[in-house]
Image 1: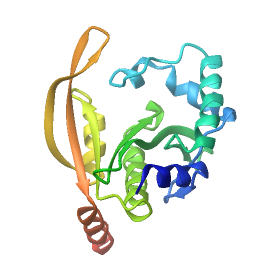
Image 2: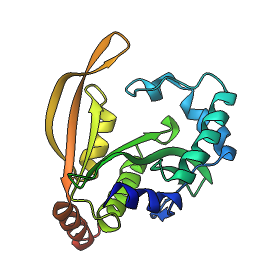
Image 3: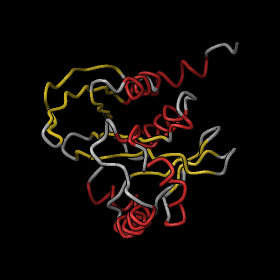
Length: 201
């Protein structure tokens, strides 16, 4: 899909659903829920942004996103855990490569919801949208070495390890080594078919 095509799709952010989650655009009214996790050092330890310093910062950030959504220039969904009616994280695309028909995904989740398969459930739905609606051929995710939770999310979503980039990211004064996982369109839909055919236990 072309860059213009991507912007057209995301100007009217589609709502996605899974058995437990609703993925939708974020609003300023989500500030309480977002600040609850975005202020925590354990959330941002392996990310490229710092903890939100106060609630006003989070509210301003979400206000900024409203303009980005209007331009079709932001591709992250807010992840709502329907049982709690609460925004518990984000998941979406961080970049697209029109010339290679590929994209990169990223995600963040509140520690209160770690270990429940929520990030993998959201990532799988975002990848389904990428392949089925955007017509992508390849989707990848990256993680800083040491972030084993993130690595397990990628594996649970069916992605395969492809390699490690040593000292590939400079954050502050420290170089970070980055691991890469990816999945191809045919592999993804074959995985979904196999999961659908798997016997229930």
